Length: 394
Image (tube, one colour):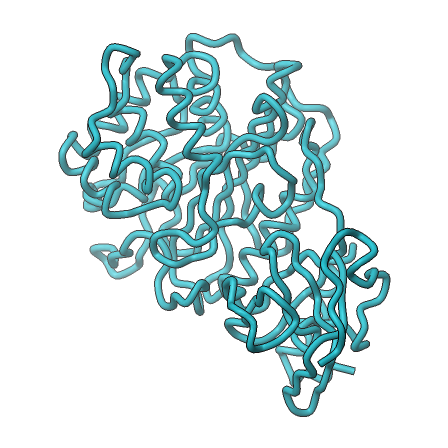
């Protein structure tokens, strides 16, 4: 038994286990959403959601789709598009800019964003792109925060409009460059935060994503800590809030496309209670994203479980001496494909010889860190029958 956690931590872990089981002006206006919604928004989370099926030209999900959120790194799409505007086959991307744009789109590099924001007019970029794409809710950072590109106001429906422009209206070289980089999203972002949450964790490829995170999380992941996203200044009155968008609560956004031929555009913008850990926000956003009606999206096979412990190592094999693939955000939910006996791991008072294979990470974690009452996870097959390498106990 490994759920003998103490106090509030025990209640939070049990709640996690229970929950885990369970357009642009030039484009035609899309259809409206159905009367019923599939979206399940976790308690305490504020969300703006828009899911657009490009094949039918209709939204399958719309929840507070016009609500404004601070964009965090999702605004990097607009920074890239502004620079690439009308750049056709006769205007190749200079190598110096390619070296900045690729990590900005793939790994959410903030230094690259700072460069384009400062060199091309800051808030004027947002004004230009808002007019070009016919965005309805997008606005530059509020007065006093002009230097903070991540404070750009953005809605879920405007995010869909941005992707519709990229996919349907942008010159082919621009479309291909942007989407190819979003398809190559790296798990660890340039600031060492794990950015394969939401869309990337909820659906099998093909997908393409541009994620966003901003705020003070308890701890980061991939070895990071402290503050996520761009620097967060205090407001002039000390309140850390502004009229247009909430600058206080931690933000976590997942946006992009899912399915063959980029069939469905998904935009989920969320705010979480102050003090929320990155793992909790990551897990809640995953629960929400998996609940959505996303045509063309294929859910990965496996069972979801909660975890405990900080910076749990994911290993190439079921032993502590095997190479480390990455480290998990504290308390994050994980998809388990299979399990196998391996090296005995002891974390007093718990001991476990079973290891779980995490297909989305391509590695194993000891079952001692999985929130389950038994050493061997219920309903999870042993590795070997499903094509994964089989290991013997050591």
